[in-house]
Length: 234
Image: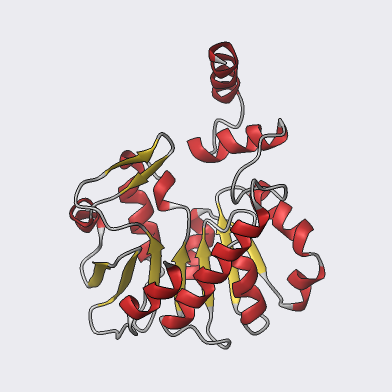
């Protein structure tokens, strides 16, 4: 196993140098037949992945998400968390962004005609695309299974980019289990303490930690019952 890990690490240094570390690692692993819990179409436990995705939709609805709301997902991956949201929203209301189109191209294959029926937008997250999304305010912006893979040196950029999409009336949601100390929950995922996140939140935006999520909004914007909504996410 150590020999294989060394070979894999060497290949990752040579391939897709311009992608983020987590993305390039899992693109290669998926191409080699490895299974992930939410990336690709052959996930480890599809029933559990779908159950958690439905829980996420229930949580978002608890925060006030309505079918006519515009919703942007940062790090949409292979659209497992997005699928129930897409089905729930009216056509033309969901935009999915990721740093590589490889992940969401797999989700597009799985969902087939639903993508066209719901007029889903799937875009590679570039500075230009971020500016485009920032210019058309969304009602909800969310990131699920993303922050846990953001390394500490990447946290300032991630939070800055996410907060660019938070306008007056926008509710931002990032899954992040409550913890007093930032640290690895396992070798591949990080839980961030709120104290380590707040320095990277721009002025004028309120960021609060709830049981499972960070909620972000403009200082005067109301947020509907995040703790009640958390019961559906438990």
